[in-house]
Amino acid sequence: MRLEQGRESNPSGPVLDALARALRLDDEAVEHLYALADHAAGRVSRRRADQAVRPGIRQLLQTLRPCPAYVRNRTNDILAANPEGLAVLAGIDEWPADRRNTTRYTLLHPTARTLYTDWQHAAAMTVAQLRTAVAADPRDPGLAALVAELTEASPIFADLWQHHDIHHRRTDQKTFHHPAVGTITFTYESLDTGPDGIRLAIYQTTPGTPDHEAMMLLALTADPR
Image 1 (cartoon, rainbow, N blue to C red):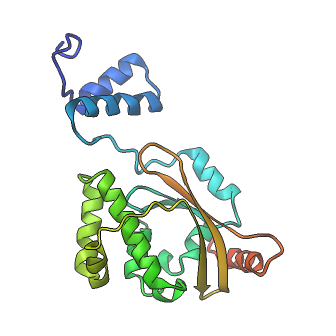
Image 2: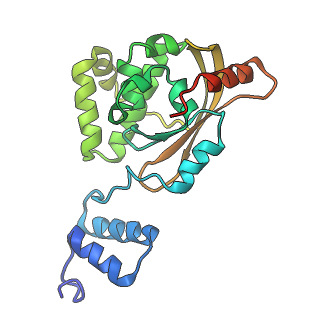
């Protein structure tokens, strides 16, 4: 076998999967195997876990209630959310699940214009974050498709995209004018949960404050489905 003889520097996905099964590798080891193969071949990783949300993370989403929380991939598609996580982005639940993307929401959903207290700033930050993701993986087809869609649909996005700004956002203060509960300020955290850009977004408030009361009211309005 060429791989065993050290003469194969570009093994295919099926070959790597067969090797992983033969060695009884766990998921983390399989990801590492693919990373090594891709590095040796000089290519961007072909193995994606972007759509996989671990059962433990789904359970955590429920444990975090009433704090709004959701899980996104590197393209900012919402892969899973608790009810409050959808409710905080007012109107995003009107879109089918495969359209729920926080960048798309910020730039294209009409409610976003009034939800964010400074929509222009929110738009600039989400475009800069997308630019950062594209710089890290310029051949990702999902990122390319999102950029093409937004360039065509939003002149503001097309203009901001030309600025080439980048932004890594892990924590922030976010103030919303929410149509269901009024003004509410959250402490926002974004936590990496895996090697392929999967992140857990959490919105928190301080107990005993008007913001916390507004969050509790938001939880009452959230659709439990």
